[in-house]
Length: 325
Image 1: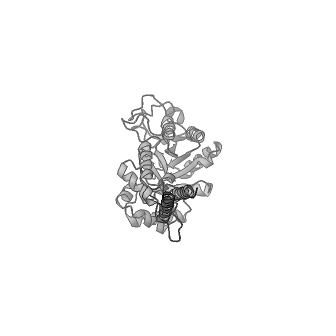
Image 2 (image 1 turned 90 degrees about the vertical axis):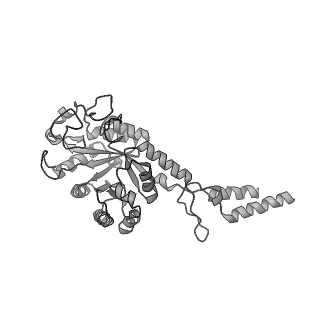
Image 3 (image 1 turned 135 degrees about the vertical axis):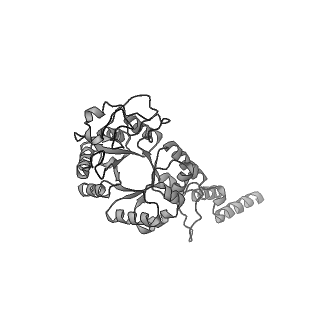
């Protein structure tokens, strides 16, 4: 009886929660950017649904306003590269975009049009997940009109409210002003500041700026963090803010993001990211107990060799006594 109790206690002491299980995965543009090898076209409803089916906790999509004020899913400001249409999103009515072929450049075999934000939100609510809505802002007029930032943010929030989806939304943007305006309109919706900073000083400055504005996350380009994982600690020391790198598609980079301390990871390769997460947890060894006998609950089940020596010794003595008796 005593031996059984000690064995159970030892096994309990040797288990802990995997830290990587808490890292959410964000399907980039749904199930990834449009490529000829991707059977799902980016920013389309089949792509959004498939990303959730693959296991993504979040799906990231891009939104803009059509010429008639509808919030549509689309990444580029011009329609040419990703559809059978010409011209700018901002100059085209939704009635035209919904009947377009939005699968150009992908391996999709079924033609689908450009969807509305409301349709993507309906899928998100169905799966009880999170939709990461990137607010696309064309800063200056050129081939396409400059974005009316306040009009776009107001339209996005109106759709979210109409769909009763506030708990299922995360906003992101490269436009600091768009996120600040969104926070003024609805402070409860979390936001992430997208940046392309590559050096430590710039990342820290962006993190501080975002944190001071009440933003919940910094979304940095993953390249600098892959090369310099110590930047995670530097950002953490500078500001209380989550770090959600983009777009992480390679195994080595995914390992670095997990081990570096990313709070979530934006990726085109959700199945690979899940596979890497599972492998890391399977191999994870619990940290040694802290001074005073308290264990750190920051890891997965540890290897048998990490059982506390005191428990192993007690179990050995009891086994010997039973043999002698």
